[in-house]
Length: 221
Image (cartoon, rainbow, N blue to C red; front, side, top):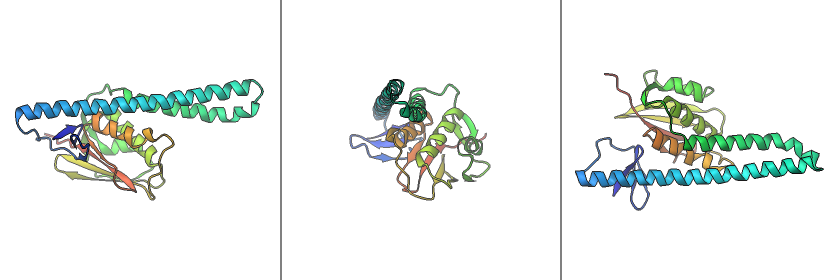
């Protein structure tokens, strides 16, 4: 059975992804209700798993910071130099956990994509049409593209966008292959969670030199 998870389709029980989803996809009423329930359960399970992994990584980072601080206070002053970097890492992991756990409070509306990119990826070569407008929470949109930038972790980012039916396809490319982050959960899994479940979009991470995000298009009346 194909079910909708966020803005994409997922095959049950194989967990193969195919998206973005056709917004009219439903089949029969009973089957549609069953597919919706399964899709929501899969989304909840994925979110819970990521929260658990991020929480574990945060606790590990906090314990490492506490241990370094204890040793520095009792005869290992050379460890003081590394405390600042460790504290930054704690903050980074805590921010990632918050991004996964907190639902945006602002409602979905038409948001100009170029304005989001100027906030989230200001140094990228922006080739997005000026009329590109998507439906979503502006807070979640900025968070998604900020996390995508951190995940790709490359110089010379380029952003392109093209309309595809009811969607905007946004291509973010980097000059080299993606570098895996020190905490893998802060890369693709976190971006996917925000895009799929908070923005009803779909993340395609198959390209080695970047990633594509499909977001619902806003059509002015």
